[in-house]
Every structure is written in structure tokens, then in C-alpha cells.
Length: 438
Image 1 (spheres, rainbow, N blue to C red):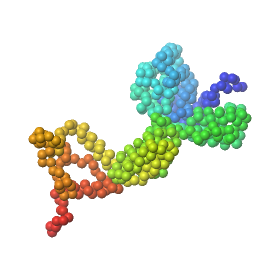
Image 2: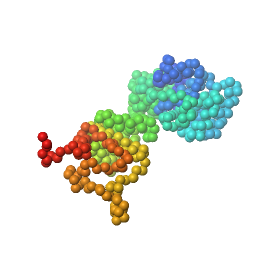
Image 3: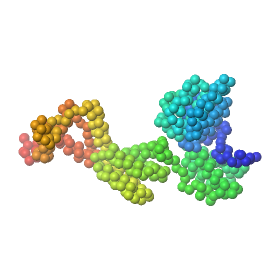
Image 4: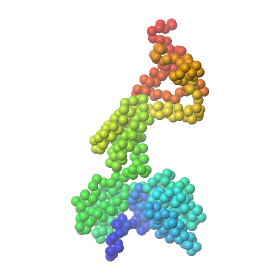
């Protein structure tokens, strides 16, 4: 029998699994012989971090672990709690320890705690006063202290599949209606599952709203469509999903796959990514992965940036798509990228070497007297506008070779030109207008 309190709770909370057998998905952690399943079966609690997208069961798993291992469960939210709440939880844990009762402290959104707040757990995790479980949607490597990570094992939760979500939604609709879903309702639930993008909480929230819209009698497609809108693809504008997607776009361009590159561009823009950020990254791709193999790529990327800045969305997205396709199919070279890093390394290793006297500026008579610019040879006075054997770097660097062009695209011609100039330096080149010695 439903109570007023039960009816006021969100559906996602009302159908939260109580046992491991009811948990949807995460078979890589909870299947037979899997690490988390083994820990729970043995009742050997250890501190851990549950890392995964929203709505994948992090809080549910923490509660089930505490229940299965008969541990006292304390839940904190890093959004609402502070050091005072942490201290209070630790006092409860100490009291429980005196009675041989284990305490499991669960911290949701743990990445929102600052360093000092995270440090507050360390001694009590270390001495066994409590078992710590943190839940986060952010990469623990970047968001959690290394000291805390060294005391907790990280388990990665995956987005739920459409099949997993369908089972969750069937359970939710049965809770709302008091009966099993009909065949037509099953088809609607499948649509909701597809639109929920791996997030069980989102799926159940959408279902609850749709059930209210249809008069709480029979779930219909007409009632759900306004709720679903265009779906809810995952895209965190500052988190791992963001950086994973821009990484995928960059690697698709580097791998010369225009179709994959367009897909990731569409995913990012669809998820709300700032198109100016994408434009900036396209410029980076043009310089890092294409360079002088096709210098037009940089200009096209800059043009796309300018179009986006002038016109905005949706007009500018086609310019971005054009640039993405061109970058993907262009000849590739990272020779400039590598050369630049070699040059920076040479600067770091050799310190502030003086500019050779013949390369120095001599705007005054005094500087000329001191030898600035002496013996400098003006390149345009020579054949091919090149001075064979001239040095343009400090002697201490010796012979340097930072830029090594590839054979691809325009850079192939640059490579030939550089080989020709090196022949001039070596004195092995014979001018075309001079007869060759037989």
C-alpha cells in the first residue's frame, strides 16, 4: 500500500535496488568472479572510489555494500557538507568501532571536496576507523588527492545499455501502475531507454513525468514525446566526457577519417560545446598534424573560426564541418611540431648563448666599432639568395637539425629544397649554367 511519504519520493529513489541481483548493468564489476562482487561476497570491506557517469548506480552500490556487509552507513554530499560534517561522521565511526561495528562513510560528488577536506579522511581510513567510499563523475586522477587514491581502489562504472535501462523502466512503470507493462507500453519504454543515454536516474525521471502527463492510467507515446524532446546526450563541458570527445575528434582528423571526425564534431556541438573552442582546436590540429604538408589547412581553420565568430550558430557549424573534413583529408606532417619541441629543448639545455657578432644589429657607430654585423653576408647578393656555409646560430650548438620535412604534400618539395641547400653548403652543387666536368 502506497503512503503519502512514498508517493512524494522520486521514482528513482523508490525503485532503488536493495540487493545486488537487482542492480542493472556493471557486469564487469558484479559478475561471477569479478573484483567488486568478490569483495562483497567475502564481506572484506576496503575503501574505494566509484567513478562513472550520472545514473549508473554509484550510490545504490554503496548502500548495498553497507547492507550486505552489515556496516553502519553514513552518507554525505560534498555539495552540502563541510569539515564539521566530516568530523561528526568520524565521531560516530569511533563510537561504532568501540562496539565492534564497522562504519561505511559514503561521500557523493567527492571531487567537490577541496584538498584539506579530502585530507580529513586519511588518518581514519588508515587506522580502520571507517571504510571510505567516494562517488565521482570526474577523473579521480585529476580531482582526488594522491594520498587518498593510494588508500582506495578505483572501480569504473559504465553507462547502462538500452537493454539495462529498459529493465529499469519496466520496474519503474510497474511501481507506478501496480501492474506489468503492456506490449504497447514496452515499446514506449524502449524509446525512453534510447533517449536516456545510459542514465537510469534520468530515464526514471522522464518516465515519472510522462506517467503524470498521461493521467496515470496507460503510458502512451503521445504523452512521452514532449518529455523526451531531442534526448539528453552526455556532454560535460569541463569533465572527462568533454576531453574524451575532443581527443576523439583530434585523433580522427589525424587518422585521416573525415566521417569519424564529422561524427565527433556533431556530438560535441549537439552536447552544447562552445563552437569557438572547437574552432581553436581545429587551428591546433592544422599546425600540429598537417603543418607544411598543406599550409592551406591552417588558413581554412582560421577562416572557419572567423565565420563562426561572425555568424554564430547554426550558420557557422557548416564552416566548422568544412574545415574538419579538409583537415582530415589533407596530407599529414608533424615535422614542424617536432622541430619546435627540439628547438625549445635546445634552448633549455644550452642557456642564454650570445648572438654571433655577424648577426647582431648595428644601428650606431659604437656598435659597428664593436664588431656588430661585421662580415655579415647579405643573402640577396648571392645566387639563389643563399649564402653557402653561413651559420645563423651560436657555434656552441654545433650542427643542428630541428626541422626534418616529410615526403608528404608540399613538404616533399620543401624537403627537396633543403637537400639542395645542404648540397650548396657542402660545396657539391654544380650550377646549371656552368658546364659539368666530364
